[in-house]
Image 1: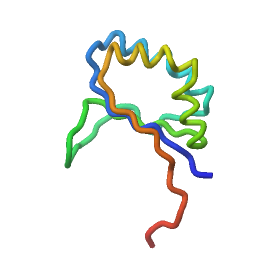
Image 2: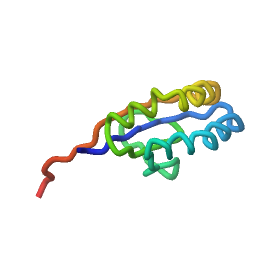
Image 3: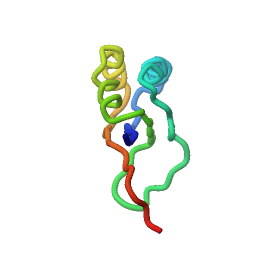
Image 4: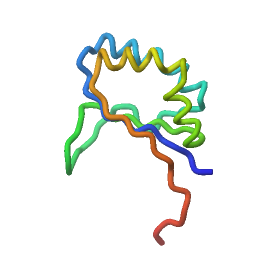
Amino acid sequence: MPKAYWIARVDVTEPEQYKLYVQRNDAVFAKFGGRFLVRAGQFENPEGTSRGRNVVIEFPSYEVALACYRSPEYAPQITLRQGSATADIVIVEGYDGPQPA
């Protein structure tokens, strides 16, 4: 079964409130087996548009990734984040097939 990922592009508008969101979401992600692969950091955007912060969180499966986002534990985090940032979030199933040789 392929893993799944939250891919988030974020512009923080209220840094202090966003810090609170970051602190509070760790426990929720841990409960659902979420693991940060990208958490801000240096980036280049050679095509298209970008936001100031990029995040990729890996989950054990697509179903678990959706369950985390829709969980009662994460619901208050959505409100907190929406009050402190503008974000694009995509939940996507990973690819587990053949790779180029």
